Length: 232
Image 1 (cartoon, rainbow, N blue to C red):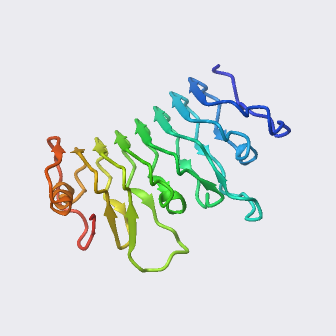
Image 2 (image 1 turned 60 degrees about the vertical axis):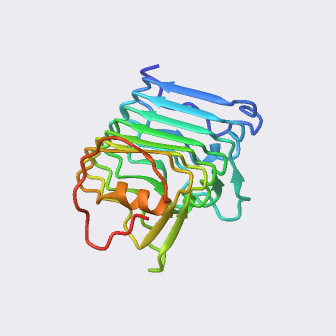
């Protein structure tokens, strides 16, 4: 599939992929955008998405310019696995407020050297069912949640009531969960690994203290972050 430049056509019927629940895209080296805006209302049954080794992919979900007159869609997406996309800039493009991801349970992002953040602020509050978050070898990533230029300066509370595995590994530029004032709640967290993320402050101790219980911890290498950063 090395010559494939697009998967979908703009005139595609609404029922064309109504029952599609799993999608694997591998070695499509001319593909740039995986899901353009006109696919938002079509893939409501998709549960599992794997994208591996596609050289030119820049955007996974390009739903940033959907008119606000659209009804907000709730996807059935459970798992996202993204690996070896050297030009990836956005998983979810900014301003994806018209799509909900309330069923998402696992996000695994590996070997994406140009990805600077994972989630836009607009979808983070939807991630109530997230159980596993793994970020590995994303050399340019500076924060997990991107700041919203239109947001106020009030502190934000991020809640992940079902998150039990959190892995930050081999991402030396990672500085913050979110650059603004914030707290993070993950009451069921059981496993935490922070490895070679040298700019993160001692998140292990802060999380362990906030949980009030023991957490399974991997060997980590961390050093001080910017003054005043609140992780939990």
